[in-house]
Image (cartoon, rainbow, N blue to C red):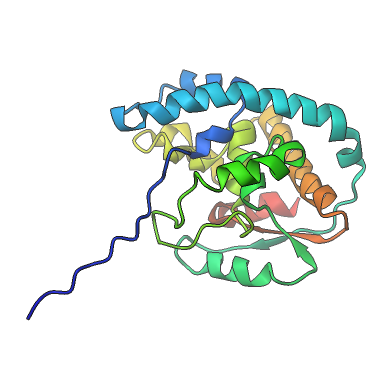
Length: 229
């Protein structure tokens, strides 16, 4: 009996990577942590370095235009989907996002959290051709408008995230203290909270209505006491 041929899903990371949305200051901080650099990822690393300059420029421009309006935005109580990786939280996130009372970070907010208010309308038509059709780890579909994890956005904004394991998989000491967040210094705690609140306000401002922000990141499961504050 002939063994059926397995279909190649075609899932590849493509020319784009998560660090393509990082700002220049954070890119320098990232390099100072001395990540292990492999030849296969060198091109993406170099392109991320160049893109970090444009990300910082657009971030500055967005702040000049929108920051006052965003800061005045009223934030409704957010809703967090809590659960371990591979436990069905992505499916639940996708289903709940269909309810009009919720708003959520899409691909633009996830990849370019520092300037999506300013640039998303243009970048959407460029970047959607560069991202894979499916997630490499589980073949879930990837489209611009599907809800995405806010943890990636937060990581790009201040690097205080266990998702640093993307680059430091063999250096857990770099990211271990960013799970529960109870080991942060007072200054780090303040930065983390302010960044998170501002990001949610940006999502609310973009929606043009006071709706509940719907967030799903398995890492929030470790931080329930912190989030309740």
